[in-house]
Length: 146
Length: 201
Image 1 (cartoon, rainbow over the protein chains, first blue to last red):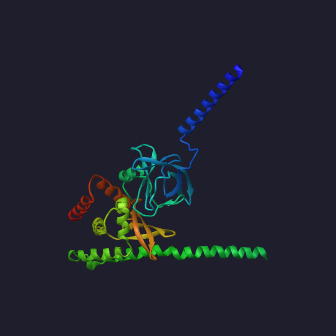
Image 2 (cartoon, each protein chain N blue to C red):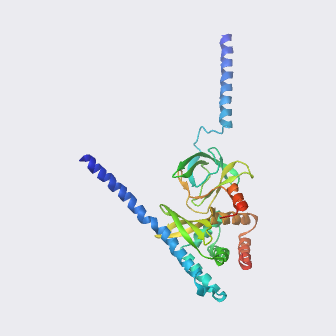
Protein backbone atom coordinates (compact mmCIF):
# COMPACT_ATOMS: atom_id res chain seq x y z
CA UNK A 1 0.00 0.00 0.00
CA UNK A 2 2.79 2.40 1.02
CA UNK A 3 4.79 1.36 -2.04
CA UNK A 4 1.81 2.15 -4.23
CA UNK A 5 1.51 5.64 -2.67
CA UNK A 6 5.16 6.33 -3.35
CA UNK A 7 4.88 5.21 -6.96
CA UNK A 8 1.76 7.25 -7.43
CA UNK A 9 3.31 10.41 -6.05
CA UNK A 10 6.43 9.94 -8.17
CA UNK A 11 4.18 9.38 -11.20
CA UNK A 12 2.18 12.54 -10.49
CA UNK A 13 5.40 14.47 -9.95
CA UNK A 14 6.84 13.29 -13.28
CA UNK A 15 3.54 14.04 -15.02
CA UNK A 16 3.52 17.60 -13.63
CA UNK A 17 7.13 17.94 -14.83
CA UNK A 18 6.20 16.83 -18.34
CA UNK A 19 3.23 19.22 -18.45
CA UNK A 20 5.48 22.11 -17.35
CA UNK A 21 8.06 21.16 -19.97
CA UNK A 22 5.37 21.07 -22.64
CA UNK A 23 4.03 24.44 -21.53
CA UNK A 24 7.49 26.01 -21.55
CA UNK A 25 8.30 24.62 -25.02
CA UNK A 26 5.03 25.95 -26.41
CA UNK A 27 5.63 29.36 -24.81
CA UNK A 28 9.27 29.56 -25.89
CA UNK A 29 8.53 28.49 -29.45
CA UNK A 30 5.62 30.96 -29.42
CA UNK A 31 3.42 28.25 -30.79
CA UNK A 32 -0.31 28.30 -30.47
CA UNK A 33 -2.26 25.25 -29.57
CA UNK A 34 -5.66 26.86 -29.41
CA UNK A 35 -6.23 29.34 -32.20
CA UNK A 36 -9.78 30.16 -31.20
CA UNK A 37 -9.22 33.82 -30.35
CA UNK A 38 -7.48 34.69 -33.60
CA UNK A 39 -8.47 35.07 -37.22
CA UNK A 40 -6.52 34.96 -40.44
CA UNK A 41 -6.13 37.70 -43.04
CA UNK A 42 -3.63 38.02 -45.85
CA UNK A 43 -1.76 40.70 -47.76
CA UNK A 44 0.18 40.60 -51.03
CA UNK A 45 3.61 42.24 -51.13
CA UNK A 46 5.92 42.78 -54.07
CA UNK A 47 8.80 42.18 -51.67
CA UNK A 48 8.89 40.99 -48.06
CA UNK A 49 12.61 41.59 -47.58
CA UNK A 50 13.31 39.17 -44.74
CA UNK A 51 9.93 38.99 -43.04
CA UNK A 52 9.43 35.44 -41.77
CA UNK A 53 6.66 33.24 -40.46
CA UNK A 54 6.44 34.03 -36.76
CA UNK A 55 7.32 37.73 -37.19
CA UNK A 56 5.10 39.98 -35.14
CA UNK A 57 2.17 41.99 -36.48
CA UNK A 58 1.93 45.35 -34.73
CA UNK A 59 -0.51 48.22 -34.43
CA UNK A 60 0.98 51.37 -32.88
CA UNK A 61 4.00 49.30 -31.84
CA UNK A 62 1.98 46.73 -29.90
CA UNK A 63 1.77 43.13 -30.97
CA UNK A 64 -1.69 42.12 -32.13
CA UNK A 65 -0.82 38.97 -34.04
CA UNK A 66 1.81 37.02 -35.91
CA UNK A 67 2.73 36.14 -39.46
CA UNK A 68 1.57 32.55 -39.89
CA UNK A 69 3.03 31.81 -43.31
CA UNK A 70 4.49 33.40 -46.42
CA UNK A 71 4.08 31.78 -49.82
CA UNK A 72 5.03 32.82 -53.32
CA UNK A 73 1.99 33.41 -55.47
CA UNK A 74 2.22 34.75 -59.01
CA UNK A 75 5.78 35.94 -58.25
CA UNK A 76 4.52 38.01 -55.34
CA UNK A 77 4.65 37.22 -51.65
CA UNK A 78 1.37 36.29 -49.99
CA UNK A 79 1.68 36.91 -46.28
CA UNK A 80 -0.86 35.13 -44.09
CA UNK A 81 -1.23 36.49 -40.59
CA UNK A 82 -3.32 35.67 -37.57
CA UNK A 83 -4.69 38.64 -35.71
CA UNK A 84 -6.50 38.72 -32.36
CA UNK A 85 -10.27 38.55 -32.76
CA UNK A 86 -10.89 41.73 -30.75
CA UNK A 87 -8.79 43.73 -33.27
CA UNK A 88 -11.01 44.89 -36.09
CA UNK A 89 -9.20 45.80 -39.30
CA UNK A 90 -10.84 48.38 -41.55
CA UNK A 91 -10.94 47.81 -45.27
CA UNK A 92 -8.40 50.62 -45.85
CA UNK A 93 -5.87 49.37 -43.30
CA UNK A 94 -2.30 49.71 -44.59
CA UNK A 95 0.18 46.89 -44.00
CA UNK A 96 3.82 47.85 -44.19
CA UNK A 97 6.98 45.90 -43.49
CA UNK A 98 9.29 47.72 -41.12
CA UNK A 99 12.57 47.09 -39.35
CA UNK A 100 13.15 47.52 -35.62
CA UNK A 101 16.01 49.98 -35.52
CA UNK A 102 18.40 50.14 -38.42
CA UNK A 103 19.42 46.51 -38.55
CA UNK A 104 16.79 44.91 -36.34
CA UNK A 105 14.28 42.22 -37.16
CA UNK A 106 11.51 42.77 -39.67
CA UNK A 107 7.92 43.08 -38.55
CA UNK A 108 4.57 43.85 -40.07
CA UNK A 109 3.05 47.15 -39.04
CA UNK A 110 -0.66 47.79 -39.55
CA UNK A 111 -2.04 51.32 -39.75
CA UNK A 112 -5.79 51.26 -39.08
CA UNK A 113 -7.96 53.07 -41.60
CA UNK A 114 -11.21 54.97 -41.43
CA UNK A 115 -13.50 52.81 -43.52
CA UNK A 116 -16.79 51.51 -42.13
CA UNK A 117 -16.14 48.19 -43.82
CA UNK A 118 -14.27 45.64 -41.72
CA UNK A 119 -12.07 42.95 -43.25
CA UNK A 120 -13.70 39.60 -42.57
CA UNK A 121 -11.69 36.49 -41.57
CA UNK A 122 -9.83 35.16 -44.60
CA UNK A 123 -10.03 38.60 -46.23
CA UNK A 124 -7.30 40.66 -47.79
CA UNK A 125 -5.49 43.79 -46.65
CA UNK A 126 -5.18 45.52 -50.02
CA UNK A 127 -2.95 48.41 -49.16
CA UNK A 128 0.61 47.27 -48.67
CA UNK A 129 4.01 48.93 -48.69
CA UNK A 130 7.17 46.90 -49.17
CA UNK A 131 10.14 47.48 -46.85
CA UNK A 132 12.61 50.24 -47.59
CA UNK A 133 15.62 48.72 -49.26
CA UNK A 134 18.57 50.51 -47.65
CA UNK A 135 21.04 48.90 -50.00
CA UNK A 136 19.12 50.20 -52.98
CA UNK A 137 18.82 53.65 -51.41
CA UNK A 138 22.55 53.79 -50.68
CA UNK A 139 23.49 52.55 -54.14
CA UNK A 140 21.19 55.12 -55.71
CA UNK A 141 22.87 57.79 -53.62
CA UNK A 142 26.42 56.57 -54.18
CA UNK A 143 26.25 55.65 -57.84
CA UNK A 144 23.52 58.04 -58.83
CA UNK A 145 20.16 57.24 -60.30
CA UNK A 146 20.12 56.23 -63.95
CA UNK B 1 -17.65 11.82 -78.76
CA UNK B 2 -18.10 12.39 -75.06
CA UNK B 3 -14.48 13.48 -74.72
CA UNK B 4 -14.93 15.95 -77.55
CA UNK B 5 -17.99 17.54 -75.96
CA UNK B 6 -16.18 17.74 -72.60
CA UNK B 7 -13.26 19.44 -74.32
CA UNK B 8 -15.60 21.84 -76.04
CA UNK B 9 -17.32 22.60 -72.74
CA UNK B 10 -13.97 23.20 -71.05
CA UNK B 11 -12.94 25.52 -73.87
CA UNK B 12 -16.23 27.38 -73.60
CA UNK B 13 -15.83 27.79 -69.84
CA UNK B 14 -12.26 29.03 -70.29
CA UNK B 15 -13.30 31.56 -72.91
CA UNK B 16 -16.26 32.80 -70.89
CA UNK B 17 -13.97 33.26 -67.89
CA UNK B 18 -11.31 35.06 -69.87
CA UNK B 19 -13.51 37.40 -71.93
CA UNK B 20 -14.98 39.49 -69.08
CA UNK B 21 -11.51 39.99 -67.60
CA UNK B 22 -10.19 41.06 -70.99
CA UNK B 23 -13.00 43.55 -71.40
CA UNK B 24 -12.43 44.79 -67.85
CA UNK B 25 -8.65 44.92 -68.34
CA UNK B 26 -8.61 48.19 -70.18
CA UNK B 27 -11.18 50.20 -68.22
CA UNK B 28 -9.07 51.33 -65.29
CA UNK B 29 -5.97 51.91 -67.42
CA UNK B 30 -8.03 53.90 -69.93
CA UNK B 31 -9.25 56.11 -67.12
CA UNK B 32 -5.65 56.96 -66.13
CA UNK B 33 -4.57 57.24 -69.75
CA UNK B 34 -7.18 59.92 -70.47
CA UNK B 35 -5.93 61.99 -67.51
CA UNK B 36 -2.23 61.58 -68.29
CA UNK B 37 -2.77 62.37 -71.98
CA UNK B 38 -4.61 65.55 -71.01
CA UNK B 39 -1.89 66.56 -68.56
CA UNK B 40 0.87 65.91 -71.08
CA UNK B 41 -0.92 67.90 -73.75
CA UNK B 42 -1.29 70.83 -71.32
CA UNK B 43 2.32 70.68 -70.12
CA UNK B 44 3.78 70.44 -73.59
CA UNK B 45 1.50 73.16 -75.00
CA UNK B 46 3.85 76.01 -75.93
CA UNK B 47 1.14 78.66 -75.69
CA UNK B 48 0.61 77.85 -72.01
CA UNK B 49 4.28 78.17 -71.03
CA UNK B 50 4.19 81.91 -70.36
CA UNK B 51 3.97 83.16 -66.74
CA UNK B 52 0.60 84.85 -67.45
CA UNK B 53 -0.87 81.54 -68.44
CA UNK B 54 0.44 79.74 -65.33
CA UNK B 55 -2.88 79.91 -63.46
CA UNK B 56 -4.82 78.72 -66.47
CA UNK B 57 -2.35 75.91 -67.07
CA UNK B 58 -2.60 74.75 -63.45
CA UNK B 59 -6.35 74.91 -63.61
CA UNK B 60 -6.40 72.79 -66.75
CA UNK B 61 -4.14 70.19 -65.11
CA UNK B 62 -6.30 70.11 -61.97
CA UNK B 63 -9.46 69.73 -64.05
CA UNK B 64 -7.92 66.71 -65.73
CA UNK B 65 -6.87 65.21 -62.39
CA UNK B 66 -10.30 65.89 -60.85
CA UNK B 67 -11.79 63.76 -63.59
CA UNK B 68 -10.35 60.58 -62.14
CA UNK B 69 -9.25 61.32 -58.58
CA UNK B 70 -11.66 60.76 -55.73
CA UNK B 71 -10.49 63.48 -53.34
CA UNK B 72 -12.99 62.54 -50.67
CA UNK B 73 -11.63 58.99 -50.59
CA UNK B 74 -8.05 60.34 -50.48
CA UNK B 75 -8.94 62.55 -47.53
CA UNK B 76 -10.91 59.86 -45.76
CA UNK B 77 -8.11 57.34 -46.06
CA UNK B 78 -5.50 59.89 -44.99
CA UNK B 79 -7.41 60.91 -41.88
CA UNK B 80 -8.30 57.25 -41.21
CA UNK B 81 -9.99 56.82 -37.83
CA UNK B 82 -10.19 60.58 -37.32
CA UNK B 83 -12.45 60.99 -40.35
CA UNK B 84 -15.66 59.73 -38.76
CA UNK B 85 -15.23 62.11 -35.80
CA UNK B 86 -15.42 65.18 -38.06
CA UNK B 87 -18.54 67.11 -38.96
CA UNK B 88 -19.66 67.50 -42.58
CA UNK B 89 -18.36 71.06 -42.84
CA UNK B 90 -15.00 70.08 -41.33
CA UNK B 91 -14.74 67.25 -43.82
CA UNK B 92 -15.48 69.60 -46.72
CA UNK B 93 -12.88 72.09 -45.59
CA UNK B 94 -10.33 69.35 -45.12
CA UNK B 95 -10.94 67.89 -48.59
CA UNK B 96 -10.38 71.25 -50.28
CA UNK B 97 -7.22 71.96 -48.24
CA UNK B 98 -5.82 68.50 -48.81
CA UNK B 99 -6.45 68.77 -52.53
CA UNK B 100 -4.72 72.15 -52.61
CA UNK B 101 -1.74 70.75 -50.70
CA UNK B 102 -1.26 67.90 -53.16
CA UNK B 103 -1.77 70.28 -56.06
CA UNK B 104 0.97 72.57 -54.73
CA UNK B 105 3.32 69.67 -54.07
CA UNK B 106 3.08 68.12 -57.51
CA UNK B 107 2.50 71.21 -59.62
CA UNK B 108 6.04 72.36 -58.82
CA UNK B 109 7.31 69.06 -60.18
CA UNK B 110 5.32 69.38 -63.39
CA UNK B 111 7.00 72.76 -63.93
CA UNK B 112 10.34 70.98 -64.24
CA UNK B 113 9.01 68.77 -66.98
CA UNK B 114 11.23 68.48 -69.98
CA UNK B 115 9.80 65.77 -72.16
CA UNK B 116 9.08 62.17 -71.35
CA UNK B 117 6.29 59.68 -71.44
CA UNK B 118 4.11 57.37 -69.40
CA UNK B 119 4.28 53.64 -69.99
CA UNK B 120 1.44 51.46 -68.76
CA UNK B 121 2.80 48.15 -67.59
CA UNK B 122 0.08 46.15 -65.94
CA UNK B 123 -3.44 46.21 -64.62
CA UNK B 124 -4.95 44.04 -61.95
CA UNK B 125 -8.63 44.01 -61.19
CA UNK B 126 -10.10 42.32 -58.16
CA UNK B 127 -13.81 42.95 -57.91
CA UNK B 128 -14.38 46.60 -57.07
CA UNK B 129 -10.67 47.34 -56.73
CA UNK B 130 -7.94 47.77 -59.27
CA UNK B 131 -4.24 48.54 -59.57
CA UNK B 132 -2.72 50.17 -62.62
CA UNK B 133 1.06 49.95 -62.78
CA UNK B 134 2.84 52.51 -64.87
CA UNK B 135 6.17 54.18 -65.10
CA UNK B 136 7.16 57.69 -65.91
CA UNK B 137 10.10 57.76 -68.28
CA UNK B 138 11.85 61.11 -68.47
CA UNK B 139 13.63 62.34 -71.57
CA UNK B 140 16.90 61.42 -69.86
CA UNK B 141 15.64 57.86 -69.47
CA UNK B 142 14.97 57.91 -65.70
CA UNK B 143 12.21 55.49 -64.82
CA UNK B 144 9.91 56.25 -61.93
CA UNK B 145 7.36 53.58 -61.08
CA UNK B 146 3.92 55.03 -60.40
CA UNK B 147 1.07 52.75 -59.32
CA UNK B 148 -2.52 53.91 -59.17
CA UNK B 149 -5.04 52.29 -56.85
CA UNK B 150 -8.58 52.55 -58.06
CA UNK B 151 -12.00 51.61 -56.83
CA UNK B 152 -15.25 51.31 -58.71
CA UNK B 153 -17.97 53.71 -57.66
CA UNK B 154 -21.24 54.01 -59.58
CA UNK B 155 -19.78 52.15 -62.52
CA UNK B 156 -16.68 54.35 -62.93
CA UNK B 157 -13.13 53.85 -61.73
CA UNK B 158 -11.78 56.43 -59.28
CA UNK B 159 -8.21 56.77 -58.06
CA UNK B 160 -7.95 56.68 -54.26
CA UNK B 161 -4.19 56.32 -53.78
CA UNK B 162 -0.98 56.77 -55.74
CA UNK B 163 2.24 54.86 -55.07
CA UNK B 164 5.37 56.59 -56.28
CA UNK B 165 8.48 54.40 -56.11
CA UNK B 166 6.55 52.03 -53.86
CA UNK B 167 5.63 54.75 -51.37
CA UNK B 168 1.95 55.33 -50.80
CA UNK B 169 0.71 58.91 -50.76
CA UNK B 170 -2.14 58.07 -48.40
CA UNK B 171 0.15 56.14 -46.05
CA UNK B 172 2.58 59.05 -45.92
CA UNK B 173 -0.11 61.57 -45.04
CA UNK B 174 -1.95 59.19 -42.72
CA UNK B 175 1.01 58.85 -40.39
CA UNK B 176 1.76 62.59 -40.49
CA UNK B 177 -1.86 63.64 -39.84
CA UNK B 178 -2.19 61.05 -37.11
CA UNK B 179 0.93 62.37 -35.37
CA UNK B 180 -0.39 65.93 -35.50
CA UNK B 181 -3.84 64.89 -34.26
CA UNK B 182 -2.40 62.96 -31.32
CA UNK B 183 -0.36 65.98 -30.22
CA UNK B 184 -2.88 68.71 -31.02
CA UNK B 185 -6.35 69.36 -32.39
CA UNK B 186 -8.05 69.13 -35.77
CA UNK B 187 -8.10 72.93 -35.98
CA UNK B 188 -4.33 72.91 -35.57
CA UNK B 189 -4.06 70.44 -38.45
CA UNK B 190 -6.18 72.69 -40.67
CA UNK B 191 -4.06 75.66 -39.63
CA UNK B 192 -0.88 73.83 -40.52
CA UNK B 193 -2.26 72.79 -43.89
CA UNK B 194 -3.22 76.40 -44.63
CA UNK B 195 0.23 77.64 -43.63
CA UNK B 196 1.89 75.05 -45.80
CA UNK B 197 -0.27 75.99 -48.80
CA UNK B 198 0.37 79.73 -48.32
CA UNK B 199 4.09 79.28 -47.92
CA UNK B 200 4.25 77.07 -50.97
CA UNK B 201 5.62 73.60 -50.62
